Amino acid sequence: MCVELVEGKTAVYGIIGDRVEKSFSPVLQNTIGREMGVNMVYVPFKVESGRVRAAVEGGRAMNIRGFNVTVPHKIEVMDALASVDETAARIGAVNTLKLTENGYEGYNTDIIGLKKCFDERKTSLKGRNVVLAGAGGAANSAAILAGEEKAAKLVIVNRTAEKAEALAERVRKYYDTEVEVIGYDKLMDIAEPEIFIQTTSVGMGSDETPVAEKEFFKNVGIVVDIIYTPWETRLMREAKEMGAAAVNGFDMLFYQGLASFEIWNDMKAEPEKTLELKKKLTEFYRGRA
Image (cartoon, rainbow, N blue to C red):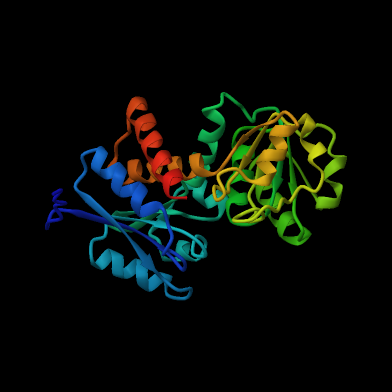
């Protein structure tokens, strides 16, 4: 029998969101904590909109050392924090809280997770043409990453032009990257689409795709689809058929979670340990998906 010891010295962490019942983060963080030798436990907290500040204040009162924040609270939570990291402020969303003497500090590790998807495949966004599908949630992190990495051009494709224009203005405020907003009907008009980032929910649990014509991918080098259920979306499959490399969102999930853990514990996982953790968690997830 394996005995899991939780005691008075055990540090408590958690994830707050409106739909946390199926979150993979508790498995991810408890596994990382155990493998890294940290005495901690990580649990999900269902928090409804309008009660985020109360949840944050309650967490501080109970000395909960850190939180991840998921939909739909990544923006609302910012008003309840003592401070916000500069990158998170530029993104306009927070997904990681760290307890300090003054209250919780806010960070965004989604951008770290997304960058690792490209780093692992030795792909740089610098000087490249990046096409971003979507303008909400994870799209903010992707757009700011394009600016941070000095992409030559960012094309934001979205059904609602107003929302996409607001995101474009956020990028223009901080970076010199050229930004254009188009609808999906203009997708085939993009001259040199080198990198494609898919941040919408289209294809999650279905065989749908936001890209109507797979020929679009014939000039694309790499596609990152933030969906990981199914493991290979139709978009990924069709991108591969046209010769592009395709990556699902599990890498982003893993690396953003690891980055949160490192922020909470002021430590860095060694590269060998990181790969070991990623392999173990990938196999576990795919085994139950």
